[in-house]
Image: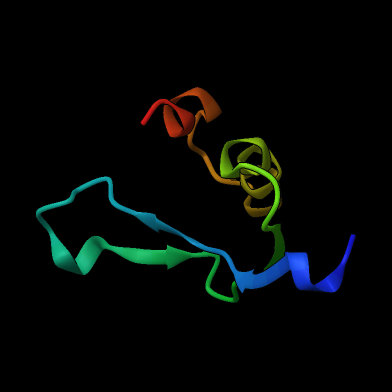
Length: 66
């Protein structure tokens, strides 16, 4: 893949089990890993890899629906 087609970012997710409690919202993992997003691929096809990388507790089907 051409390096110009790769966008490298740090990825995290927010624990928002209680969205009205602002003190309970914190990013996981605390040291965000980097992921190289392919600019030529849809985000939906890359989402499952990101969720596995993070070990996120969210079900994949709930993330892709919106």
